[in-house]
Amino acid sequence: MSEQDDSDLGDDWAAAMNEQAESEAETKSAKNSNHVETASFDQFDNQPHEANELGESGNEIQMDIILDIPVTMSMEIGRTQVSIRNLLQLNEGSVVELDRLAGEPMDVLVNGTLIAHGEVVVVNDKFGIRLTDVVSPTERVKKLR
Image 1 (cartoon, rainbow, N blue to C red):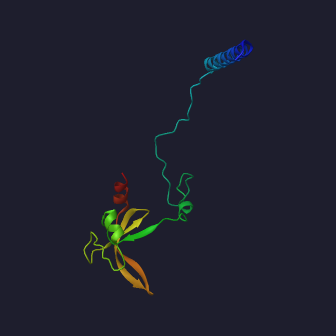
Image 2 (cartoon, rainbow, N blue to C red; image 1 turned 90 degrees about the vertical axis):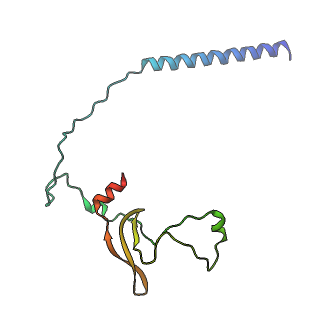
């Protein structure tokens, strides 16, 4: 490398360092000039609004809005845990033992939450379930916690 090349590299390096210093100075200046304001929020009264049965209150929950939301309903006969080794050994005719006794009611789940128990029925050559015990809404809410 010649002396000219060393001089050019030194000038480029010096220019880059000056540019970085200027950028840092601008950033520091911008941070110092930022004005912070306190956020203000509307006050809400602590009294719950009661909606009457006729829907005269503007705060009534609009049930029609949620009635068409799809949910997944499933029936569970039972469960078991198996190792991957045993799972891979299953083939046609294998029997898997579940944690339920024969004749015990099935669990009815909506989006994975237990809502009822029931028994299997056949209606028009299709399986169905007859609900025998529905979990109260209060109990369902307690299980969510």
